[in-house]
Amino acid sequence: MISEETKELVDRGVMLPLMEEFYTIQGEGFHKGTAAYFIRIGGCDVGCHWCDVKESWDAEVHPPTHIGQIVENAVKYSKTIVITGGEPLTWDMTELTENLKKKGCDIHIETSGAYKLTGTWDWICLSPKKIKLPEEEIYPKANELKVIVFNKHDLKFAEEQAAKVSEDCILYLQPEWSNRDKMIPLIVNYVMENPKWKVSLQTHKYLNIP
Image (cartoon, rainbow, N blue to C red; front, top):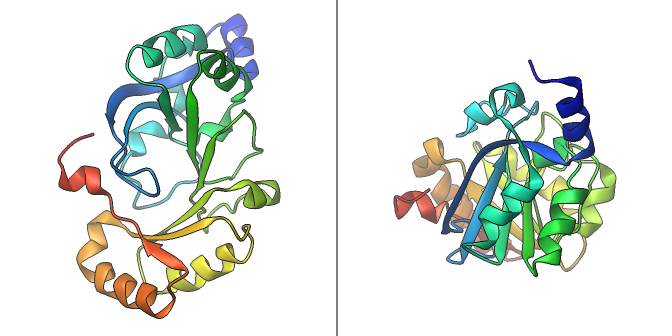
């Protein structure tokens, strides 16, 4: 059990349930191939059955960590920072992003958009889920829309989501990893027929890096 004082700091975003942090190569979407420092925040109730980091779901098993320590660790490695989860917008991202900005960082978020958008972002990757749809406010602010394709019905969902983002938002279809052999041919054909979309692959998994 965490103390009431710590809980208050977490609620304010001064401390966050840190699952892991690591320096690697961004494997997905627009910035694939870019060296970046990843900060994975625990806590998610969206509950995708194919999630590959289910250990992130329970925030209580991840120690509340002061954002000062998180920022200090991050800037040793990179000025390109990716905040991911879990679902990072479960928590208030204002303090963390403000402190990273003071260090001159370029800050990206990977989010389902299921909660209110907080924080200051240079790049927003919106990856919506049918189970818990994004807040309406995030759609026009998304820089890229990344829809995970587990079956052919997800293509219809992708079009519904694409209708809500701005004209400048880059559209990606990404095969769910465990079902990629079936979905890649479907996605390739769909993108060729609908070239507003691009293919995203989890290249870090092919490279065997985090």
